[in-house]
Length: 239
Image 1 (spheres, rainbow, N blue to C red):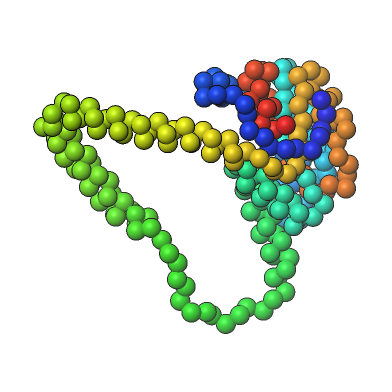
Image 2 (image 1 turned 45 degrees about the vertical axis):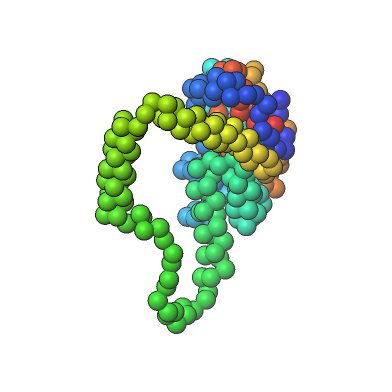
């Protein structure tokens, strides 16, 4: 299979199937315009066309049995950052997020570098969680430990039948929360932006086939390689 538009979709498997599919070991590679020896240009203003990005990856392929690629490509920094954000909103990848922040920062630099500094503003206000302070976080942790110990002591002094009734109520609530969690996680997987690639034979050559052209001057590709079985879940999600 060659490069095609990407669409994130939820996998069909149940909890047991997803657990068995998500434990494999795979290798990942990333190319992008700011990678030394791959991107072209100088300083922050570098570029990497889609065919050249695919070619750089093809040179690194060994005897891997299968590969799946995810690519974000655009002709300008604004669209590049926007497409990364659209992809990460439904399928977060921290390496893409870092590239998106860099692209957004360069866009901002282009639009503000000629602006004169403005007068200082008022003292900034920002909301925060009190537990964000280290000392308060440690205090809260110790308080929770003491509370847990008190609840354990109370549990030991309560009748076994009362404890069993309480356990059943809590188990019912926990079962409902767990069932809802899987449905919510699947619902998140819809949409995205970019390109996808999959091949389980002649990977290096397949990477170079049917790539979007050189008009895409900013390209980031993450390539996952491993066994067909280990990549099955990713292949289902990145359809």
